[in-house]
Image (cartoon, rainbow over the protein chains, first blue to last red):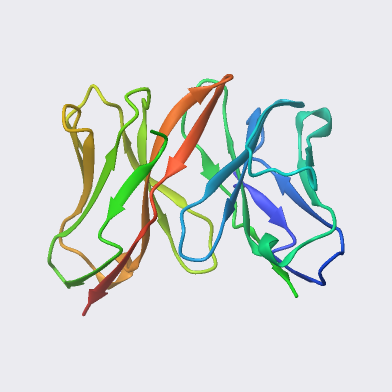
Length: 113
Length: 114
């Protein structure tokens, strides 16, 4: 039984570049969540998928951010024209339809220089 | 109303002591209250959770106490060990558009001195 995996674990990019992160949820978990965690803070909700449908997006998710979950399996989070304020840990979590527990991956730490 | 306030920000406890972290919320629509443990460079790991219809839940050395009328809940770590040194987050879950969205507290950095 593998947990939630995320790639890459670390990403350093220059301001203005585009970046894409991938999340592979626990198998058979049909719900997938993205959160953002800045240093010294708790994670903040970004968006949620049930299967392939993106059902909710936070106001934190500006139009430079886009997330997809094709075929209801893995998900990608893309940030276009990165800004220094985008530097954070991007966390993915998954859960089953019938239970509320969310299990987090190790995160992708993004540093924008 | 969507905030969860957590205290203290940092806590130092001697080995074998009891660590207590407190959280408070306002929104009565929250229906599930988990605690997560996070080590540096890792994602949060689910530790223990409680529903609002239960006043206490114990799992090993970890206990959640829940006071629905006061809208407060706390995590107690008994016989604290150096391996418990980590950042702890309380959270509250609210159902929105079919999702159980988690709202996290600000975190407590716990240090257990040997």
